[in-house]
Length: 424
Image (cartoon, rainbow, N blue to C red; front, side, top):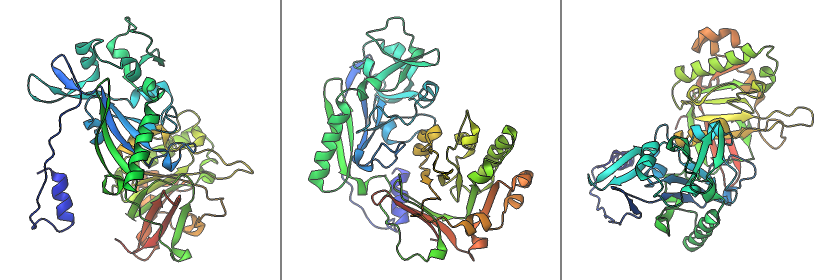
């Protein structure tokens, strides 16, 4: 058995119970290219968009994860390889925009069936393109040309293009009627089932095939947990009411806070870079998925690092949650980044993201807890004790009499709440 169902049965006390299992045998959708069989493209689609990277994207817009070849890379998350994320009502609004980032967060390998060996195989895309040449349909809809740090559309056959210059972007596909057709299919299925759905699909170069449809409540996406009512106001730490995704982060032991008001007072670029190095050190020291990071509105800023702490994904990879704080400056509220500097990494690692607006009178911001609690930075990371005036580390059990912080995020209600409660 695969370890996933075994762990599922163990967690629910079902290991000693006999289970009858049905087996579905399904023909692989695709075409033969050389000694390989594969769909031209495949993926998964959801009638609800759980991860939103722009205020223009609504929870009901739906989302798809697209890959070249077999859909295994869209379903099974892989290290250092990325599907293309598409908001179906805003298909050209990408999570990453800059050409170098599009290249960095692109699919690197393609999954196929090797007909000679009779088994699955994963092939680097450059090698795959050298094998198939121009035999693959939809090439101008799947690939873009990355040349001189610019991302260019494929025009005609473009005979002078090298395989090393081709990048999977699906730019041509998302500008076609495909996203609207997929959204229509999802809406029909949701209407028929009476609840949100996800589907797996594949395209053979001529027709779109739906391989599977199931209710989202049975899928791998986070199930809805409503924000608890009647939490004592003294136990509420912060809340949010904009751009909330569906997620929970229970049993948080540490809060790492870089208050924007302190960060913007730093006099030099080197001081700001040192904050980033402190965060990186804490990422390695603190227990994985037992801490959250809270900081100024644009985590991962590369150009103007006054806008946010200069970190890369590897500097935040162990956090359970990334919070971007948008503090009002006069009548102006700065934009948050929606985690777009490493959005694909957050999605693949299932790190929750939340923007928080402390100056909004409709939300909770427990200033006493967040800014008045003892700072444990010197104890946890003594090499950065000199940064205590800007980097705060709160050891929650010490402040909350053994309790921990829990964060519940309800996308349907567009509400999130962080609160203190006994460990779960």
